[in-house]
Length: 592
Image (cartoon, rainbow, N blue to C red; front, side, top):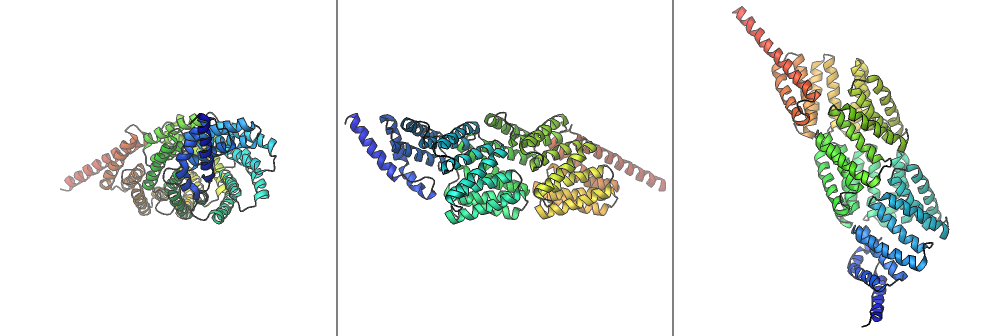
């Protein structure tokens, strides 16, 4: 058989496979796509070998690549097929043609989902220009380019540009498609998420619910798009502190994606990560760590270690270690995440950098390295101010971090106005019934306490306790810490029985969450020991000091200021105990 005949047979096979190969964007077609995948890849070899530069060849390559991308996460192979398809379309139609723009768009999206945002941004701008010149601005392809460009701007933290483009795309799609169409729902979902990033939670909640309803009518409840809307809606509920609504939605989304996409897919990994984050917010650290590690492993298998999803999972595991007092582990993971972000994002201002800097600042503060803590805290504040502006929760959180650093250094006059500003922003963005609001209020109460304004501090600590009980429940670290804070005030007021009651409640909650050998438990043990010390019950105080000191030495080391403080408390108590024994013996001898 000569080469020309071979080429004809190859084209015949290509046409047959193309006719049978279904749309991979419909999950119902994936079984058939998988059955034809081997044949499609053989056709790819024939296309290259025999230079079959036809629109059918380009289309089959594109559809095969799309399946490899969205179902199997085989990005390298998908890119290879997309590039061959692009080359065919360029030969057939030149660059100013819709087919060429479509091929280029697929490559851009592949770059975007892998975190290669600058490459994606450059291609999407080129595509938008081609489509404006070929199909005009009132066309679905042009609207799709606007949407794609919007999503990429959002990925790099340029939210104002993203919002404008997304709204323009949505208007075009509504006019052409109506509101009950998958493309319209996708665009609506993107707009809802942009409102979420801008702290417009009312609009985000409304649009995510609307998207969920549309997708339910279009796809039913067993579809990745429906699962995505469940996941996104849960995120808004979580920020609002409604965990009883958030977690069931995440669990349902995870179950859907596990059945449909399998456990080695980006959407499944994202669900794992979000559910882990929700558990962490509730203080369910064992469940959170298990899911974070599973998400990290899944991300590594899909993308490798140098990807934003992997970096974000790493960062959140670091936060988990920080909350458990494992500061060196936490720092190591944060620097690892920063290294990945820098390789992907470069020098652009991005919220992911700010989040890492916030974590580092808080850890360095705990470790008494105030110089580094101040450096990272100010960097975080600068990024969030430039990216989000001053009326945003991220900026408020950075203000709080800087204020808390000043508070721990005793610089109360510097800390208080920052905390009040943070509190005001938080109230405007998420309201008073929220853990962020409670956190800022709690720090202000600490300052009042340090300044001797005991009654003002007591009133605020009680308000914080009530908020935390409503938002997080009684089995949560923040609730336990509020119990501890109120106990400390009772002790300072000399109301020892009340103080002991609240301290013991706090310790029970902390030990049930963290186990006995956690720094938060050690802190409360030290406080109970101080109370017994005040009462002269040295034999009760000493073993508590010893246990607390042992935990602090293991976690922070012997040279840390907190460790030295507890060591001093123990030594003073021991001295007083010996003096008491000596006095008792002396008195006994006199009486004898």
